[in-house]
Length: 134
Image (cartoon, rainbow, N blue to C red; front, side):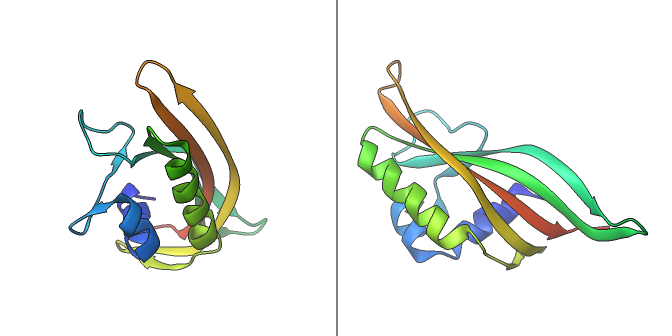
């Protein structure tokens, strides 16, 4: 699954765009954000990508686990974005950036604080079940 599909899914949710968007561009980046990016912002990374098979054949679907991180100097701001993600992304399906998403499953979330950057970090994990692309 492509990270672009996650961005497309997030862009389809106005409440998330309100929190993380600037003129239609989300402040969500693969693995690390540019320096001096406006907060709150997010990053994402793929944890695993696994084929989904049956006993007799391949199903045509895979699932990918991603974790998404939200950063802000304000704890509550991170918490709000994570809650919006859980509310609107869990159970989501449709086609996003050309990827047919069968379903999205919420796994877990956690929070932390980095005293070096003075930023709160909230993390949320999802499984994305999607149609394998040729």
